[in-house]
Image (cartoon, rainbow, N blue to C red; front, side):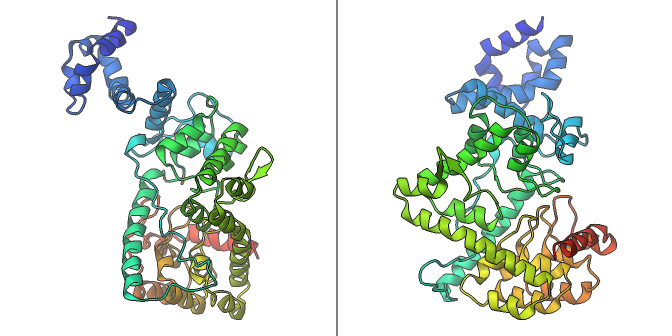
Length: 410
């Protein structure tokens, strides 16, 4: 039986094969008994049949593109100990890509198994009406408890979606060419997080530009425009607090994203978008004041109604104010921050290293880690490399390098 007959047989008996895929009894089918059939079964049957199953169930508008995206995602996320040449090129920032750009990476969840990014209440309790704060009444306490549950779920999702280098399937997909609108379709159907930064601090958009895939970068921008047309504020609150750096500068037909929102009558969204740039500037000032040990100015900044947002917001390195205060080994500010915003203890950097991960690699490990643990930091949380905080107590090189980076940013 040649390859064409093999796949024709699969197609002609598709319902029977689909019915057997879950328990792998498809391997007993006679079409898999020949030498060629066994080879194809071992290497292609499982992903291909699962992909065809998804196409049959979802009935997408463009089945061929959907099938292509599904298989690319399957390859990019399958669990393997190997790394391909092109993956290495993506990690190194090289623009070299070819048809194997999505080969052999870690993790096994399929495109359709990924949960929706929890964007609700991810804005750090930002208040935008007359500077009124949210208080600490019982209702707020219940919300905070729900926030904690969401934070745990979000962390688990972030660990599952990326490899040890911080790259998601979108990083890999962004490094290769697609048909027109293909990457946009992938983002919309998979709910992939566009804010993820890899170990070189690159978002998928950055990877696309480095790989000379300008169309892919434009597709990511178009995704933001599509959200602006819908008019929901929550996704943009999440993008802003996650440190995504291409929100306000996105354009469509010579119109800014703010103008797009206004043209659709989304006044609340347009108003919020106008606050992003000033808030980013204040975040950067806060981070710089921490680096410069200007304690009085730091406390002045975080005394305002936007304190929680400022302490939870990540910068372009994926770090929060608490991360930076720990790298600068400033116990006074560390304690001040965790009292104001204990939620910051759960926020990881670009590689999901928590503040406690950082603390374990500093010279003041005893004092800083005690403050963090007493306020709720967990010793068992793992980063993307599978390392608990205690790893960095014995292996300080990574944290020392981050401290050097912060010194250079002064």
